[in-house]
Length: 167
Length: 91
Image 1 (tube, rainbow over the protein chains, first blue to last red):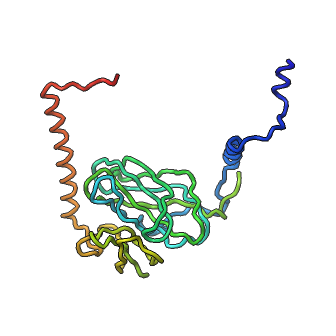
Image 2: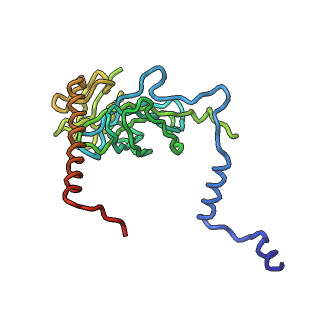
Image 3: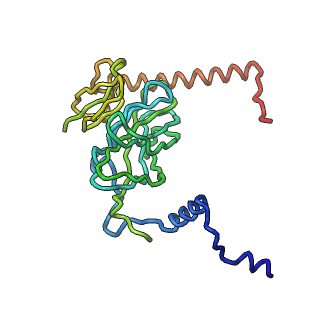
């Protein structure tokens, strides 16, 4: 019992940075956010626009050009998902890349790999929340495993940070 | 709204479509003014460096090309089976 009591005693030894990172991660998981009442999950392009057309490269496994989803975000946002539909019938391995920054200098914020075909529903994929600062440009590019330039349509799902609150 | 395409000067390949001009450009890239970025039923044409119609005939040809590629793979797999090849089990 003495050993158990000793092991249960609160340690006063400073924890390591790594241990602090774990505790921070646990704290983050414990403070999940939700959308405030009256606010909504939004999309780029904004409703009622159709999703943005995006084309892969003519070379296999190479990205096509970035298409702009928003020139400058009105406020800080979190991107929480993508909606993607492919116009090509065959099932292909596709990577949808979300980039942030000036044209031709975009920085990768997320790579989402999926198998996609031209199903009528397309796919909606939740992704780890990606925070984008106010005034930032967000663009998307696509690659696939085909040696032909194939088209699809894409939309981003996001919430302004100010519209989030803790559970 | 004014749109631009950032294009590789040598090939005409589009790198990024944007409604704002970049302050700096990657080496070997130039800016081409366009009416709008590619939309549904359109594609970028590296030869003319313009957004052009992605015609139904082109789309059909692309689908047929993909179908042919799949058929070629199926034929190749069938040939391996005919030749008595057995799939190997992982160790």
